[in-house]
Amino acid sequence: MTRPAGDLDMLMGRVQERAEVCHVITGLETGGAERSLYLLLQGEVGRLFRHRVISLTGAGSYGAMIRDLGIPVTALEMRGRPWRLLRLRLSRMIGHPALVQGWMYHGNIAASLAGWRRARVVWNIRHSLEDLAGESPGTRRAIALSACLSRRPDRILYNSHQARAQHEASGFSATAAQVIPNGIDATAFAPDAAARGRLRRELGLGQTDTVLCHVGRCHPVKGHKILMDAVLPHLRAYPDLHLVMAGAGVSYDNSALAAPISENLRMQVHLLGERRDIPDLMAGSDLFALPSLSEGFPNVLGEAMAAGLAAVASDVGDCARVLGQTGRIVPPRDSQALSAAIAALLEAPDQRRALGQAARRRVVAEYPLDLSQRSYADLYRALLAPREV
Image 1 (tube, rainbow, N blue to C red):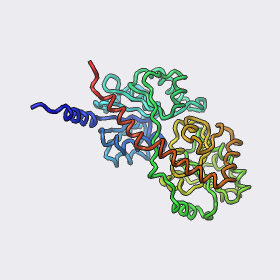
Image 2 (cartoon, rainbow, N blue to C red; image 1 turned 60 degrees about the vertical axis):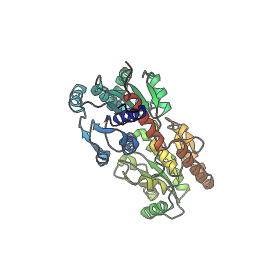
Image 3 (cartoon, helix red, strand yellow; image 1 turned 90 degrees about the vertical axis):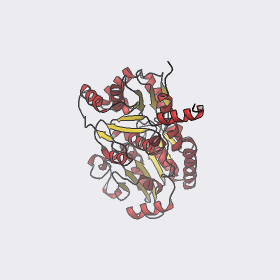
Image 4 (cartoon, helix red, strand yellow; image 1 turned 180 degrees about the vertical axis):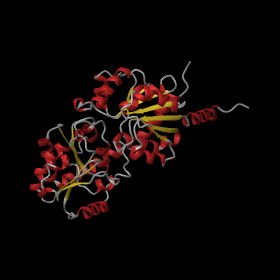
């Protein structure tokens, strides 16, 4: 008995969709790439395909979360080890997946070393090159090596158009490039009046106090010093203004970060360290600042917009494309321009709220999480389809 063509197509689709994808990522600490991988595995793509995750370093904060999804995670703890040893270890454990997906420069190189001639290989570049001189020597070497190897992967993914243009101008192959913007979870990140009250009670603020929020790990590329230079003068002029900053290493225990904050301003500057309640933190704030020196598509910007916040962001990566007309874009490294843009929003609370509402509508319409999920699913299906002979 002959199976109907439609049933055969459906059966082949199911077999293909349950193919194994092995993700090789530099690390699993808190960060935008790590969060994007977790959201991908948590959603439709996680159900359509079988997955494994290999971290070149440690399991970090996302390792346990990914394991809770029922997905195996292996941490190689390969810091400082030579590539030849890494290739040997990966080759022994990677098995025979249908597709190897790299994440970030070192993860991409490792994916190519492990998957060469045995699987389809996809790179995922989530970084722009505005501040190449500020990168570590190891990262600069990884970027140069990646450019040399960039004709090998079957697809190079970028999460921002600006990053794609910068990398191709720096010698990366354009042949198999594709942009898949980040998807934003507008359900988890949403306006919440109750969160506003909770944040103010936690920090001992008045209900009418204004909160300017920043979220990002303590690293020079995130622009903490620029934000401090821009905001600290406003704290004297606006006694009801509070700067709330969260991220790994962002605490008063970090003497370099805390040094510019005088004792009389510490009641208005809240360094919260790493938090697990970022949706509540954003929903409890009034506006958002992103003073980064380099970004691709920053998740935190889209998440702040989804929470209904007007944002001021550096003109790096795709920040201007993502914000559109719903916020303010300023030149990177320009604390005076950042200060002026923040002041303009502080002086116009009605306009600030209207921009925040428009920002949420924009994220929901342009950057929904399910659109990103479908884009990855379509890509994996296309690469895993039987090749024509």
